Image 1 (spheres, rainbow, N blue to C red):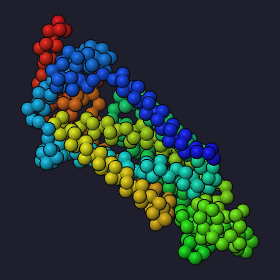
Image 2 (image 1 turned 45 degrees about the vertical axis):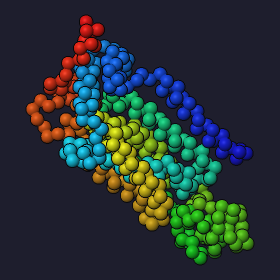
Image 3 (image 1 turned 120 degrees about the vertical axis):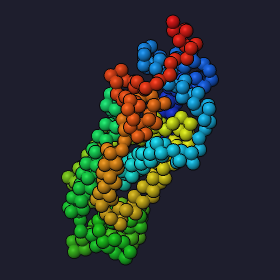
Image 4 (image 1 turned 90 degrees about the vertical axis):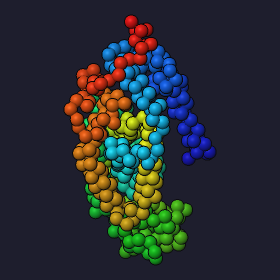
Length: 389
């Protein structure tokens, strides 16, 4: 390891932050904020820049933004109690919270946080596990790039459902690979309080695997990363900490492939779509409080998954843990298939209508131009219309 390498590791985190900061400097102001400041012309310029040119869709969107800003000004900022009392908002809030919960309960951060540990259990050495963790993370990056290309062409609903369906399959493959790894792993005899299984021994922080050779065979003995507690009974050359097998067998490589495949299909849909959809489905006057609540659900589930992952590994085995994640993901897929509307091309001011009982002509989704014609849409502000003329 490089001396003081952790400083380089932490310092490199400033690079993407700096790139993002430079990108933010080139962003225009929010058209909705500009409208609320009575700067309709600047709002139109921002929309033209964001949409790539002037057209009926831009004027229609500006009219809806102006109408929504006036309604928000008259209603004021809503509270959580008001949001829960409104049936359409309550339905949107239920879907938004479920999206954020599904993102975490499908196990993504258990994989991101514990990639090296998972690869160690798969049979890779400590050094190889660290380097392969970078390769697994690159799959997440690659999947995110694919998502940038698909989000506007495929649609939010289709992209999320497709991503989640593949997540279920890859979690099943990951569980199956671990089951195969357990089946071909060494038979281990537990000593003292150490477990009597190869994978259980690799998960126990107070134990390590000892290759006794001959009649003694493989044992799980008390120890830590510095060596066995009884070094005379298990010399350093025969001792391995948090490592199940001497070398990865074919299930180990299958586990690595499943990890990469999981992040590759998770990142385009289940990664960004919960955040994208939650930013679109709430009415303007309660958007802040609703997004705060759904974000809290995300972090609560994140904490729960991170805190229980290693415990679940020991309680229900690695393959049982990933089977549990797959079952949760499948249940959420069925829920979203039945309840999640498509929000692609729908102005933010019109999205709440998607959660109301269907009425004739209330909203028409998915026109070829990428905008919706909403019945009774407001006309563009007078000052903007005069400048256009």
